[in-house]
Image (cartoon, rainbow, N blue to C red; front, side, top):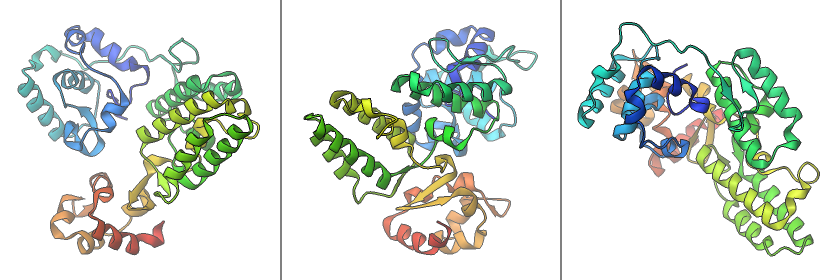
Length: 331
């Protein structure tokens, strides 16, 4: 798996690369390492567009991406070419990253909490950490739960370890059912009213905002903001005392299905598994999207789901309606 600033738990790999190339420490000082920043970027802001890897939207992140590239393998040549062009545009001398041998990260050690708790340094540690987090779930604050399980998901991806479906939910990688979301928000409203909290009206507004909305949410920044909002309202109203009793906590409220968001693609209000879309022949996409687009989303005459995935959620409304009608049987 390719590691860059978008999926480096604790930035352990970045620290190792920066030690190898001290000049990177100075070049990267102005970089913001925030997943929300990357989520909002267009595909063109990445050297590896189809996988949204190696951000090049500013000088600092281009330098960081060049550093990560030194420890990456199996990267297409066009990615290196785009990195070189970005470096030239920002006036970065790529020679500072040259070395006779491939960079080797000496050790991999991650902590799921910034406080240094829940150390993970191997594949075996991932399973131990997963079980430890589940056991200590009730003892962690909502903020610690979000931090720890989110980092666990990243570390599991790094070590190529599968997490339990229930852990995927807590790690914030599953789909949100807006119907279930509304049900739990309305339950909070009732609880807040019983506590005579004036926050009850805020829950009512939140529930109303998602009634009649798209049945699913798969955009993680939106989901995390929603969980943060619910957590804030829960603390203000006092309904957080019902967690684990009559109400799920904010993470469980938002990440409330077993479906992994990365495996799903939204077409209008229709959510379809990537694997099912990948199994459709190129002729189907030619008929739906036209020959020119079919050429863009194919590799060696076969549909390339990595190229197709970013296009489908952005289809014009009329075309999206046709696509939903023809693909409904796959949902």
